[in-house]
Amino acid sequence: MIKKDVIVVGAGFAGMQLLHHLRREGFNALILESASEVGGTWFHNRYPGCRCDVESMQYSYQFDKELEQEWKWTELYPSQPEILEYAKHVASRFDLKKDIQFNTRVQSAEYRKNHQHWLITTTTGEQFQAQFCIMATGNLSVPNTPRFNGLEDFKGEVYHTARWPEQPVDFTGKRVAVIGTGSSGIQAIPVVAEQARQLTVFQRSASYSLPAGNRPLSTEEINNTRNNYQQLRDKASQSFGGVVFKGEVNEQSVFDVSETEQQAEFEQRWQDGGVGFTHSYSDLLLNSDANEIASEFIRNKIRTIVKDKTTAELLCPTDLFACKRPCIDTNYYDTYNRDNVSLVSIKDNPIECFTEKGLITDNTEYQFDALILATGFDAMTGAVRNIKIEGNDQQRLDNIWSQGSDNYLGLAVHGFPNLFTVTGPGSPSVLTNVMVSIHQHVNWITDCISYMRTKQLGSIEATIKAQTSWLEQVNTIAGYTLYPSCNSWYLGANIPSKPRQFMPYAGGVPGYRQICQSVVENDYEGFQFQPAGSTSNDH
Ligand code: N01
Image (cartoon, rainbow, N blue to C red; front, side):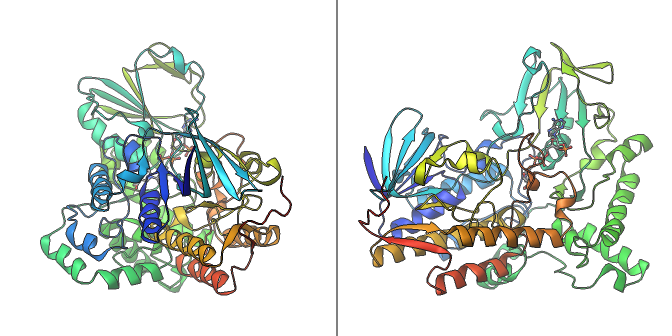
């Protein structure tokens, strides 16, 4: 049995920053990580074209000024290999690996109320004891592999974008099929199309994709940002999504301006690239008529880029813009003008089954040598639910979350003392630049644990009252927006049997941070502490 103050699960960006901060505060912490390396989602998602949709100089840590100055990003949007290199650099710079146990998958965590600690067990039976257990398991870390009929009969190669092999895959001369046209598919398709002999894309729903406008960063830009990093960080943390982009947030309604002005604004944002388009007008995510104007602008762009009219119409999304996370791309729509690329809609004719050589839909067999599943994730709750977490009174978190993601502030769950979730459901997390959200949560959790040490407190638990009221607030805010209007992974709608509930907090980064701060200022309002050594209500 190995004893620690804190066990952190996951060595992605959240886990790494936690380890660094906890050690700095003098805690004896250990990360348990199932992979053989740091990086979390950026370790596993190595598919061709994989890249972040937040600009590189903002998708980075802000806790160390020297780190900010020394790491040199090369492109406006960072590629997966570069992000992974950055994660490795941070790990070695802060000597993190000595407190990370790799190739170690946590199977269960059991809270021992009478000892005020967690007993954590791995799949090999190794056990760890710690007062605190922190889930830094990521929101997009458990791949979703749909149960296609007969998939196991297919004799070709099968890849999932979220579990891409470490060695590069060469599709030269091959017939390739891609299922899924979310962010991952949209990034992979243009790159695979350049290699493959034939690429067939099977699309269930069309996504809105905005041009990334990716390009190399100039030395001047890098120096400019480095010289003004604090201002950039401050501005980002005051912004709704924790990110600064060209064009700023436009506070006007789309109906405040003429059609000509609307189109000019959209065009400028389209040319600027990236998700700034979403902030062209203040009501795009609040009013479906406003949304439709932006949606139609994008559809018209698709119709202009894609030469084949039938393909262009199939690529035009019918959902509201941005109710699913918008994608950003490099040459996505133009890829459909290539002779070796074809699009098959499986919206009305779902995949019937796989065969040894391919798949059947609409009574037609499509044959290919390799299949890429770009079918997304069991988002936000998947990784935590995969661990058997037992809290007070033998309650299981996977059971509770099978009905809805009960939580307080996205940080804690009633019935599970001394357990924290970093950027968990109920926090802004996936609606933001997650590096900003991680930073805020890591600071909050580290401060809380330090406070407990100072006050000699043995346990902290969210009250049921605070949790219920928080869930109401999360739902109310989501209800003001158009987010719940389509079948997105934000709602768990991509996973059969998952409860339909809008999981993230849609009130924005500054408001959320303010709430978390006032909870602390009001003596951790909504949490209950027990003194260290307290054995009341032991089991
Ligand atoms: O996953 P998705 P993703 N039969 O769930 C389809 C982040 N990310 O990996 O829309 C047929 O968005 C599904 O169809 P539908 C980012 O936050 C970021 O692409 O459900 N098709 C959809 O087309 C992103 O939002 C970056 O009808 C099926 C696709 O598979 C999140 O990760 C890059 C199906 C899944 O799309 C997830 O993106 C990559 C079935 N049974 C990812 N099941 C960047 O930073 C699913 N699909 C840019």
